Image 1 (cartoon, rainbow, N blue to C red):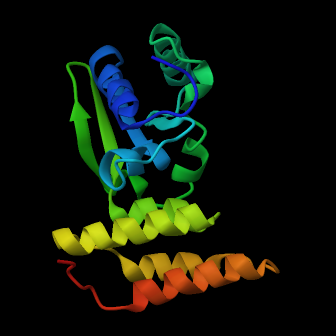
Image 2 (image 1 turned 90 degrees about the vertical axis):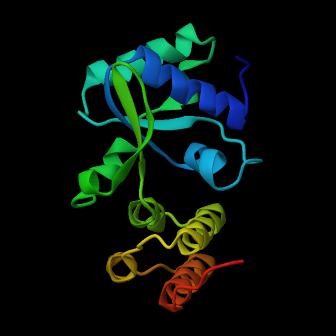
Image 3 (image 1 turned 180 degrees about the horizontal axis):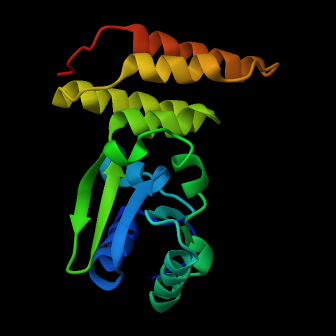
Length: 182
């Protein structure tokens, strides 16, 4: 594999390698999930994979795997576990993305995906949330909109006018009735 920005095929190869070579349960989040499921042309600097046990051994196994794949260890990132574990009930908001002989890679449902984005809510995060909501509407998937709005309400006030505008835009999008896209 090459270094630099990772595209969809490289992300798929990493997820496949995790499922086939590692052990345990893993959660894929962030831009790499967006590239796999929402925006195929998307690239990312790293693959956010969280070992669901939260152990140092999982982190080392992930870095060893990156090294074995010819990637810099920074190409895999488990730091998202800090944010995942701050969300009550996150373990119940998952579905299987890929299962291997010894490991399973999960993905967050739309509610958890958006909850993981609202804290920072960069312009790209907002776009990702909108893509996820659109996909959920197309599929008829449940999104816990009141829970996400409550998370937005719980955020500290900001003097960043652009961030305030993004939070308002997401709130308005969440308040709109579910609508299936053609």
